[in-house]
Length: 240
Image (cartoon, rainbow, N blue to C red; front, side, top):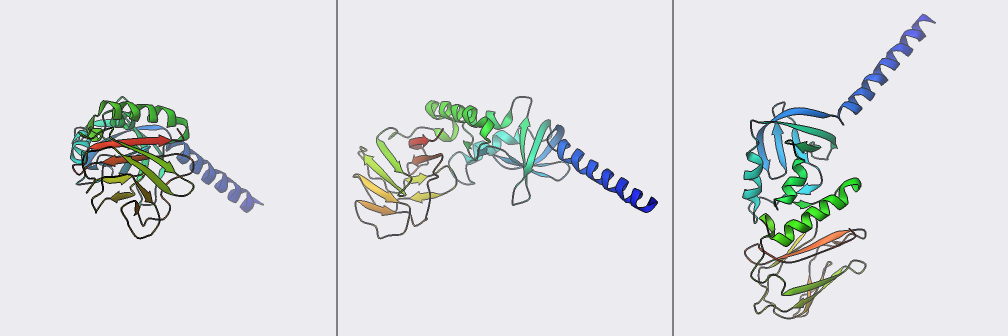
């Protein structure tokens, strides 16, 4: 009987420790950044790698990527607060950060990241902040000289985009991107209206094929078109 009692106490203590650990992971903690990987990821003094929640900074060697990294590097050696919410498949901790303002949101406000997999409770706030940054043309949203000369309508069910081209320029090396990292680059000159299909096919003047499979989410997504310099020509979102 005494043996069973000891086992029960051990189980209670173990369960209590687990619950405290889970709760503590959601509390704010003071940390120090020692190294920045890119515009949304950094390493702490204790060795943990933090991936900022709700955002996606430009990939390395793409437009405004270095500026996004430089902004985050200003925090190296400084104490900040983080609120860890989980861990993603690459072993990085997902977190909100405060300096003391909400860093994740401030990065979007400055145009150094786009919104990505936003927590449902923060969707509206992050979308409105990104919309403001895009309209102002700050950071990664710098407007191309062709800004507004293109229109596009996404058919998410049948996986294609219908483009209306009003630019007095061919679209060679322009890129089309969804809200994640899926990017299509125009490799053959085009200067007239065309359709871009997500799946495989043979290109023609009026039809282009991404060869990606499914691209557009059914609930919410965004499309961004950039010119050959990486500057923004067109954007549109749905579901927000």
